[in-house]
Image (cartoon, rainbow, N blue to C red; front, side):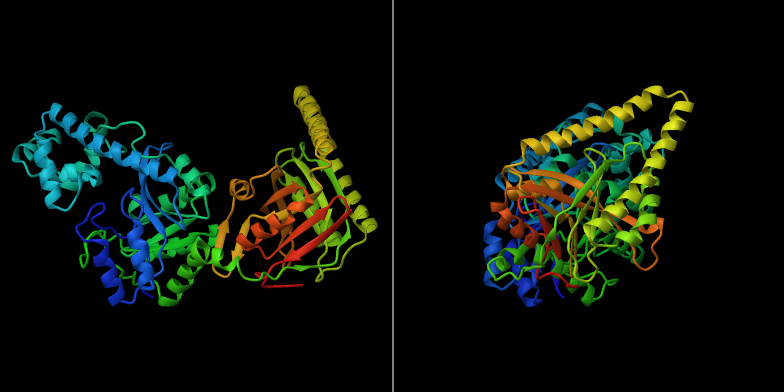
Length: 547
């Protein structure tokens, strides 16, 4: 399957036009193109020309970003149905600052006895098909080495040992290396930090990918494994790129990460000129030899559905199936005093009684443990009396844990900790009671909407912020953790947590919830109608294992 989601044109830093890329795309029967010029969103004319030639595409750009926590620059590729004017403004600011940074860095090196003529540097770069707004510090390093004076001066600074252009660039002009503090120059807000990129990602149903991880994580695969979870959890990165030059080890590491963190996979060449290959970039559209066509097709279908198809399919008839409602029931109690493994042990002792037709939640805001009943046809539906009996057993186990924990606190003389636990429990209960009282009329139903998307090859973790952006109204939302377990070998270790959005709203808005569940590709979700004291399960057309 021919595809390329990462390549460049004369809009940023190469001579080839978008028309030349489309011409080759037609010859090679490429089915999907995403032009990712540096900090410049793909032009409308490119998208229109792709459409005329039956090539799928989308808004796309390669963002120059910065991880301010570790002072590291990196590139992120962004794909969306439409990139907003706000985001375009952020990228435009990056370009403006990039021009200033290059000029200031050259002035600073001149002050340090290097010889660099700024105007001549621009002329030289233009001959290399690089515009002023696409230049970077490596371009400066390459120009520095045109001068014998500069090469001898670098040799002198390095104890008379010669340095390559690449080594000079790393050691003198990159933040994380030894000579940067004396010879490097930087300006604030040159690149948007990852918090801003997170906000960009949250604006729409977008894919934000770490470009060429085999280059970004320079200390090789271990650095990739160590740092990737933070990028996913803190900054909502939801994709990782398999660069055409990635080795088999890198491809295997990326695929392993994809499965573990439900990531999209993006592709390929980072091509800066047609029909040219170097140590970091491949020929336009050519694929990595360590992936087969079936894998590429599966991955591309996943994000094409995510970016393009869902808006079309919303116009089709959606097949929602509502199972017969059952009587609503709920019970909650605080787990402020429990240690990490205590709740898992308690749940394990009662889960064979409860089984799966009860939802078990941890409310992170109040640290409350909640059980609530909902119908499933494949599992027996316990009566309220049976659930109460199961819950009483659980409460007794938890109370024993609580008493033991409190006694140990008092024995150790930690009276303040004891009082704090009791006070927190009281405050949490009072806050829940008051909130319910205030919102009793306008919040007359609750929906449990899983945040993990799992449909065919789509693995994506949605966020509370995404839900807020979709619904935009007077509702109450919390992120709770749903407790689940493996049925094959149920043990305390097999209990795991799934994030869910708990939405309380007016029942007249239920259609908006249906639309959101469809957009998030949920297999099923539950609705609890407070006014009717009923709970029911809704299955969508994405449900692969219907009741």
